[in-house]
Length: 265
Length: 214
Image (tube, rainbow over all chains, first blue to last red; front, side):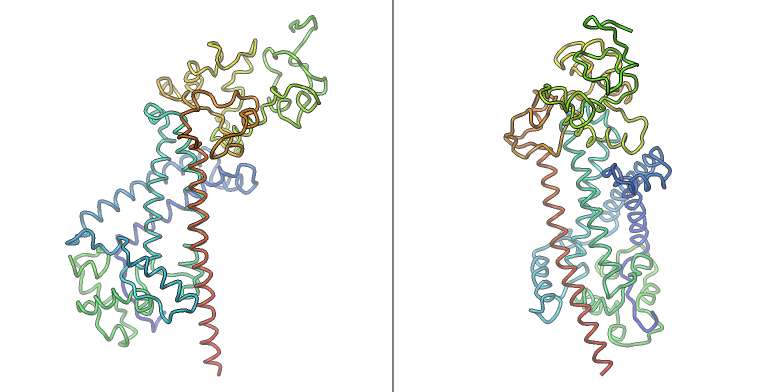
């Protein structure tokens, strides 16, 4: 790891949010997915390992409520504390450039283009991940609550509609699980650039090489604002990671999303 | 011991090998599960040629297995109900159609059946507006099959079930289908990107290694 230069991409608040997301979703998967495969021996094993059906219910319901609380917290935090002058210029929002980026990225991957399209703070596939999480929490949260508080839900909607919602819960669960196990696992573990594991989820940092490759527009802005010096970008002492220095410069807002946000706030 | 059709009959002593029964079973049959006989291909009542198919609960049972109740039961949740817990077969003195006011699964009585496990919160709810027996595998997005092939023992699309339908579309199937498209679409598009990305990065790595070796 020494010799590489690092950039602090996410503050501690976001690393903790991801930890909670990770733990609650894993618990939800192991306590929920076996119910879709009651004929399989492994499903019974997984349930047995977590202490039987009664424990499964407690785990699933608790993790679900923690996940929903996280969703609310994230939304409130984002609206209140991540102050940006113009809402629609927030870097996480999807815009037409992303469509162009998808197409150009595909051209790059099939060898019809020399380089990856220059992207800003969030690449199109990171935005897709993020949209997936929001969609997932919303769908699973709403449909899951109608199961947990069925007596209440049934006062307003009929049994037929409840079963429509439950079908959605079951199907969306499979979509989310498979996306996480296949696509997200590749992105953060099996991707040759990151194998065996990206450490961003623990320390919030990514390498300067990755910044240059995937987030050149953000890097340009950071350099222009003086938050990253050109030496950090192309040279400098490897013993002094860029992210650490930047942290020392800005101790007032440890929870901030990143340097770009700081610069504009 | 009771007398039916002039013959002495004890439910507890009855075995599937003894042959068919052409009458309602008072008090149920010991602890034999309903599907012992009422499932096509199992037991003695249904598989024989020429017997009325209406005694089969195959499709109803399949839908039960797919339901939250059935899944929880199959996973070993002892509180989850099976047939007799809602249909009250152990208390049958005669088999009543759903429309009969005394039937336990009559829409007017159903909330009370649910309340036995789910508590009194179920009493004034819209739980009877819909069937517990949704057989996903046999439902289609635009149902046009004869109802009996889709529901077997069940009477077909009842008045309560009409609210599943939006125009000609079956909403449960529609939602499931929508998510299937979403899942297959997302995973295949992203899967293509993953494979291309992996291939490209491995090629790049090999090139770098070749260059440093040379």
